[in-house]
Image (tube, rainbow, N blue to C red; front, side, top):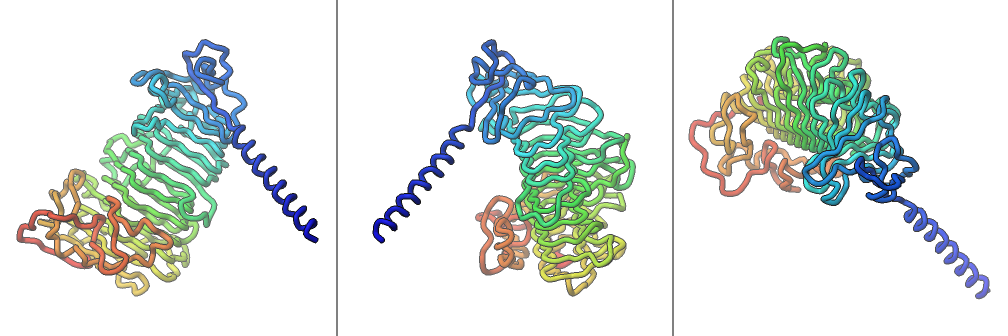
Length: 491
């Protein structure tokens, strides 16, 4: 009996050692490759000396491999021609060279797309560790999206300067597990493309499946037409997406070529969504627009965003609302929707936030739907007779501790001038007693959305006790507030 047990143990240990060896062997098989347009060696990709000299020479890359692409010495550039139909790299990581002899700037240019086809398992990164975008996209063809990647599952694009482009930055239908971070994009007007990002996803993906963060995106709007402009994250079905710490800035033109009402983010159905810590400027329609057409909304968190209008023309339009979540279908299911600690500045006679109203449809309310701890400033409370924070008294939508400063907010923020929210510092003064420890505690939502426990600076909000109202936790030692403050609670 003892021998039988001993043999079994030995066999188990032997099997475990074989499995470990196989795992280590697989890990050891991951390869490092090199691309350098100035290389003069054998061009087999095995070293900088023998690097491939063009993208078309890259072969044999497997998942887990890293391909370094040289930008030349620090401060220099090297340009790489794209295939005529766009580049479809094999699964693997493609990144800027990591040493000073090769971490200059790579410029990709061609006559078609930048990237095309399924990009599952692909990472493109211009991150050299210095916070700069060492990948740039130069001239491209005029007929399609910069990145066209339908049927993609698992794709990252990081630290890329796309410059000015007339077409959609990325189009993907269907897709999931997409990450876009630390990129710059300046969208030009085009009659055939009216959004910067357009991704259609299967429903009910888990939180944080896809992430869009730390990007700066500029998009055009018609300064002479009410509400018209390109969407930034366009109308589609989204699930499992976190959108945070981005700058979304709209700029005016008079020759707008497309036919779109501009929204910052327009899900037509959404589950497990977080939209937080973003900055929106001059979005002519709705910076955050939950537009229930294809389904309802569940587990939808919108918090710590700053939304401003600085263009008098946009302020005079009929269209703008800071945040709108409504229905254009019958009995759209709404549950677990939290809109909290946002700041909406200079929206004049428009809704700051509208949850559950507007649209042509109806809503079937579940639990935990509400507006909490939001701030509006310079909002005149006159949009068609509706309140600044709109739930129209619907008992199924909680409206708690939202504050409107009318017309200005003297002594509340470190610096703010009416109608110049784009240059304001909305940190709270230490003496802003109407906001400090006067808000609803939302820590019950932390299990699903841990980020809600922090302000825009990453300062913790208390697990118990009242929260500060607005996107920032009050600092210490702020100057005293001047007199003359007028506060209008709850819109």
